[in-house]
Length: 301
Image (cartoon, rainbow, N blue to C red):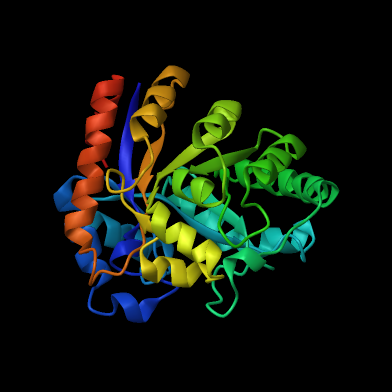
């Protein structure tokens, strides 16, 4: 059993807050990530859009594509329409042997609107989530048939944020719908990291190691700030710099035989948290907890 360690380039190139990372380039992100030791990177918007261009771009930096965000609109689209909307990304990820698309519903999320408090996110009833889960299962079966796993990302500001909502979605959907398990979003959303991981271990296909700063999260909740305000204020950070017990997470991944990607995703203001320094801190923390858990780490892109 071995895992592979990847990173999202969001610390260097934030797609939602591009002005915050204007002093950095995607090329710097990939070069420095590989220098630190990361062997994969999730797709960023400022990477080449075409498949062959992206393949050459990644090869230049000797780094693999380890997934990437997919903005879903399945609440408002029928399954056939949604298939066509995401087809290009699915075909591209299949061609580049990416482990999954990181899918999240964005038709009604408030995560990208700095004027809306994260507390005012949309909420659906259990029955509504179950109806969504049935549609999502159809979509996930189709992506699987195209050679790509759909890993659902529970996310702050969306209708799948809380632990209970993750439970509903997993209960409502077939095994083709897997989980992108994100430690930071789960804790920020008020969930129990280890209880949720234990409950849905058999559905976890992709893991984001993301830490939080509890004092910042508390202030965001109490003062009705937005998700983007939370990012700017430093709600998120890399493993080893916050409050999450990643050793417990790694120990459980070892117990369950997880052999996928562990991805650092920690958007922060680079003026306060230099990307290279913090990304290196996160990488070294993952190596440490994996070693103690008895998990081998692959060094191959």
